[in-house]
Length: 452
Image 1: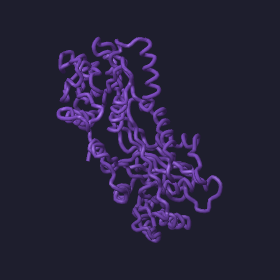
Image 2: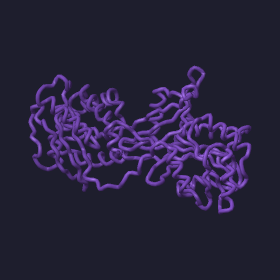
Image 3: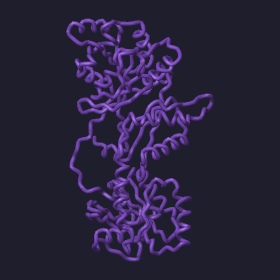
Image 4: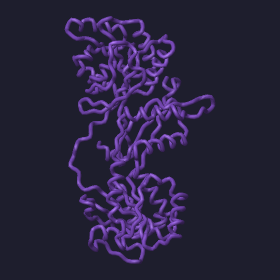
């Protein structure tokens, strides 16, 4: 199923997460670098270099998943080592599967067995990697890892890559269905729907953009019934514009052709990638305008607000319009605005820049490592308030899809809606999501009682 098809069905495929754990200095970060195919995790021949949970995007056999590198785990640790162990346990809680790394050259250690006991309690699927198997002779030593009771140990050399393919195959089997990499397919013109209530100048805008009388225009509201498609070039870029019928106040109360026109307009919004919502600047912003903006947001489409009939406004009307935008349209402050006149052509050319900006934000992907570094900063500066003696934490975050950007936050408990909105606001500020809705889903960790 393609990402667009998932959107149509209202589902999001979250990239599964594998946590890499083990005692200090068994080669976890070296193995992480091998898995992601680049030297990203810091590696040094002394224990304890990795301290925080660090996440990376990974691909294997056309599948995408997330790898979380953790610090060395010592069950009876004190001070900083205890905090490192806690970070590893949090990584396990947020993961779909665990990759336990052991050193095949030294055999099973007491610390390894203590780690196994914690993993059994987590009830997560575990893949066992017997690392530092650099040759055939050491492979026999890896067999002793069967004693851990986790099933087949996979002999690997993180340093040289030996056995890493079989290990990654096993990891993918342990993970839930990982989404396939998006295939590059030739793309046609970007689809732009012109929507708004009746008689705000949607057809006049299409005619001005196309340079011809493409749609019938009349002062009578409801002139357009069927969606009208037209290829339009703005600033050297060709778009497929869809002019739609004005959306009535109550679709259920509409009859005959009005009812079907409204349904086709809703379909045009779903079919589009970006919507231009046309609002009459010379008249007060209405509840109908806000309902149309909400429809576009709920459909997950990029948004540009075009205040049309700007030539009919005076200083007083512009003052009140700004007040209405601040008061009534505050929840759509993320959308780009263009003040224009479809009749005279004033600033119509600015729509091209606004459309491109909105589409770029709509398709933005934030790397998992960058996202979790951002979440770490936000949570450290503004932790979730304590409620009933409990303080839920954001354990991990990943972007499930783009178009619109959809993020999944794995948490230690239920997050309050206002805190989710705060995180969304900070996401917008840090990653410049101007012109696109963003969706945040919260997945609270199950309590042990619920899992048993």
